[in-house]
Every structure is written in C-alpha cells, then in structure tokens.
Image 1 (tube, rainbow, N blue to C red):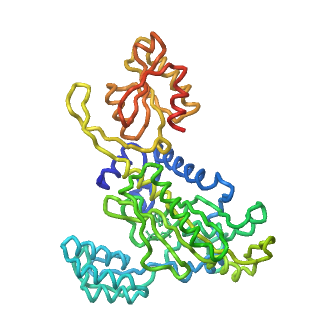
Image 2: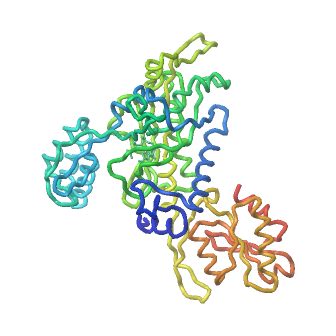
Length: 472
Ligand code: ATP
C-alpha cells in the first residue's frame, strides 16, 4: 500500500489538495481542493447523487448548514455529541482518550502482546463514561506518546459542535451551531418533502453537504478534519421492515465502491461493537488506508429516534399516514452516511500505483499512475501534438477545443511525448490523444489508454464516439 506522505505530496504537487490558508501557516483540520481536486470531488458527488436519486423512491434536498438550535437538543447532539478528552500534564498534548487507548493496543499487537491487547480491547468496547476510559489508561499505565510520561489529567467529555451567533447580538439566545452532520437537515424536512412529492413509504431523502466537527485531534490528511463533506440518505420504512432495508442498503453501498474501482481486498464491513442508544443495527464500510482500516461510510438502522424526538421538541406530527391500510405511524429510518472527503482519499490511495515500464530510450523507468475509474478522473482526455511543427500544434489545438465542449480536456505541447504521458498518468487521465504526421496525411489520431498503455488509431471524426463509448 502507498505511503500516506506520497499521497499528500502528489495531491499538493498536482493541485488536488492544498492546506487551507497556507500562506498563513495553514489551519489545522481544514483543507482546500485545488483545480484537479475539485473536478474529482464533483465527479464523486455527481456519481453518488445519480446512483442515489435517479430512481423513483429517493428525493434530494439541500438544507441550510445553520439550523434552529432546538434541532440539536432533539437530536441529542447538545447532550451527547462529545468525545472523551485527556491531557498530558508534562507535554500538554491533548488526546481523544479512546484513540489513545486504541493506538496503545496497536503498539501492543506490533510487539506480539496479543493477550494483553485483547484484554484492553474488551474493556474499551464496554467503556461509556469518561471515568471508564480514565481507569483503562491508569490501570494499563498507558504513556503519552509525546513525552513518555503517565502524568494524566482526568478524562472529560468535549462537545464537538462549533458554536457561533446568529444576528448582531452575541448572547445566549443567539447561539447557533455549524451542523455536525447533514442528516438532521433531512429529518426536519420529512413533512415538507412528503407533502410536496407523491412519495409513499418506503422512500428516502438524500443530501450532500458540509459538516463541521471540532475534532480533538485531526489526523491522517483528509480522514479526520474539522470541516468535511458528507453524502447521506435517510430511508423511511414501516417499523418492522427496517432490517430488510438495512441489508439492501448495506449491499448497495458496498457495491457502489466496488463498481467505482475500489479493490475488493481494500474494502470490508465492520459491525459496530457498541450500538448508539438510538440504533438497533449498525455497520461501517471500512477501507484499508495506508495506516490501517478506517471507516468511510456507516449504514445505521436508527429506529424512529430522530423523527420521534423532533415531534416531541417541535410539537409537530412526524407521522406517515397510510390511507390504503388505514394506519398511521412514525417511520423507522435506515441511513447511509458516507464521507465525501474520506472517500475521495480512499479513491486516491486505492488507485495509486508505481509501475516499471520501458521508456522511450529502451530503459526501464518508473511510472506513477492513478488507475482511477474514468468517471472519477479529473481530466478525461489530454491532447498532444507529437512535435511542435508542421501544423501539428494548430491541428491539436483545434481538436482539443472541440473536445473541451464535451469533456474535461487538457492540452500539452511541452517536453518529450513520454513525459507528457507520465504527467497525465500521474493524475489519472484515462485517454491521451496524439496528433502525428499520419494525422496530417489521413486525419487519424492515436488514442492511448492509460492502463494498458496501448494505442488505437481513430479517425478525427470518430474521436467523440470513441470517448463517449468508453467514458459512459
Ligand atoms: P469516526 O468514528 O471516524 O469519528 P463517525 O462514526 O463519527 O466517524 P459518522 O458520524 O457516522 O462518523 O459520519 C459519517 C461519515 O462522515 C463517516 O463515515 C466519515 O466518512 C465522515 N466523517 C465523519 N467525521 C469526519 C471527519 N472528522 N472528517 C472527515 N470525514 C468525517
């Protein structure tokens, strides 16, 4: 598996991802998507949107990020959306207590101390209160990875929601939160969507949008950030039918990643050890990142917890009326909750490869290539004149301008042709078109495939069809 630093450096060098406000030294937990990154991110979101909403039973919404503060009382976020936090008194380093313990377990396993690791893991899976985490840290004398000391404060809960004020007066009555998940924007719109569409249960509501969490420790590039994007869908079902739909969505979401090219061996399910109080079943889809397995999406059967609480807190009925069977009930919800930015990183890591190839001079050389699904690739096609004379650049530019109307295309006339191929391989461009002396004679071009590196000769008038067929 590729090293994380290699991905970060490629992402920066080629304009996929930059540090946020880099000229000021960056802002921890925030990243900017550059010219290539934004294209790939949009492709990813488009693919999700099409697969989730281009069907009869799912509607889309785009709810505001700032919501009525009662939303977060009803959802339980004000009372419970917190992580256990601990400080080391010597190094002043701050940790999520559960992560500190998890990392200690990994170190034990690396040292083949599996029995002890199992014992601590079992305790961690039962831990709920701050004191549970504290007791584990003290009992097993877990040291601070920074200073090596065991000089710990108590563990306390830290709420992850970002607070701000709405309107000109900064008082308690004007506190609002940046949403920590997009899901609540869907729940509060359950009635409005139902009233304005002809949906019948089962049906879903989908949304893509930013979410914010004041994570205690940000780490691993885009994996744990303070500002990120989610793609979520809440599927409303009749109580009692939730497990059938849970299995359905589990399978659908897993195969979505596979269809887009994630290798089977890098993807797995992990059932939740501890169920959240509102869930009656939950599983994560995990990807094998350079540092190990990590969640990219959760599928959760959330019962009627959210709608019931919003009904209670708002005083508005959140029921579904089934006029055919003469029933009314608060629907149960099965949700698919994925991270756009985390998946973006999974696709980068999964598609990265370094291969030995024979260069133009007959010698073996390395090529770095992103074997991205062509629908995800930021650039679909690049156009090159073989040499910068004999009318080739002009013809290449004309072909490029034509293609640009329909495809995300790039023109490149600088350097040896092999170098130009390498530049495109590194950003995952699936097709490169070269205009050569034969083009001047018979109008045909070569189209080179990124993965096989084989070339087809195609007449100029056929280029669009050729690409349409392969990019569709
Ligand atoms: P974790 O256990 O890693 O903190 P979570 O279980 O809290 O994640 P959910 O609340 O289920 O995550 O959020 C759904 C998805 O949103 C996750 O699968 C992940 O892809 C994404 N996500 C959550 N938190 C972050 C974050 N801080 N940075 C980037 N993506 C995130």
